[in-house]
Length: 460
Image (cartoon, rainbow, N blue to C red; front, top):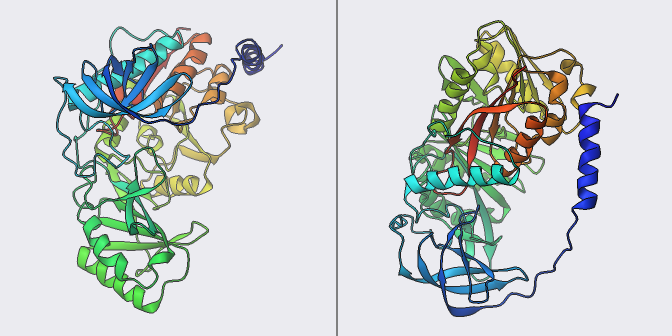
């Protein structure tokens, strides 16, 4: 008898054969001015959506629903045009003045011109639209969103470093819709302790003899303070080392060096422990480990995961894409056994250390490629009461096709991409699961990036 996974793969191949559409090659980009457009709604990436006089869809960066704008068309495609606002003839009641001096060029925070409460409403709408497209029924209303500070929330960010003939040395983030960098002296979404490091780096880096050997600089905040991880493409000279050491001391920053192989080590200390705390559990991690960048939302969503699951102490739990134990270890305190599975060996090792450090003995961790069928892994041969999923943006399609074999009563899915969440939810509903509750997790205020926590229950 064919497994659920085999049946799903067969149906997927048939859908691809039936549903193929012709591919249109975009026309060459064009520029024009003086297009007056009425903005109907926001696209899922946060641009205004309008139709021109010919009925062609136009995506307008910087525009909001209800606005009448004059826009400049900067790219003309076969099926749509892309534009930017030139003037706002009739502004939205929800428009606010972006406080960031780099807003017009930086590609990071594309919704600063929208009132924060409306940003959250937009994310609810986006999730609902993706689920409607997949014909998946959501509960009548969402749970209250987990909100963040509007600014000063980001505890990790990577700055590019490059030199160009026109600009010289540039330290900053990518420009909007470009691979080029724009110089960044101030970033309001960084945690307050990291913000002064931007102008300090602009003062230091141009003085270095080996400034051309810097690939990027990652700023990071943990419970103890501020850190900077510098990617060096060549060895650091003695003079530059002295300057870096002095800079670190003056700015109270722990410095790390990363080589071309991705290996990271403290520059001027034998060892450094990076850490954060949730409840009584202390998490140690390395600068190279995946870290939820919003500490406030991360703490609240781990607490909410525990509340929603309501574990009674006798359950077997499987945590997939478990990292270094962000969900695994808090849940271990409330169940009989939990297994964490992660693709990166370094994070599995870190999770085991964190379990030992915190005296947690009912948590086991395994490395596995979760793009392969679960039935190939020994740890998946026993049934689980609960499965927790926290996948990357690509989602957990293969896992969800095999979820029936694991037969959990509850599935808690933490998603960073509403499109793949809706796709995976459609798979789960075919196996009898229903969405019991869901909530927006606003991990990235001022952006169109939407995260979601969703609890599925099987009625059997």
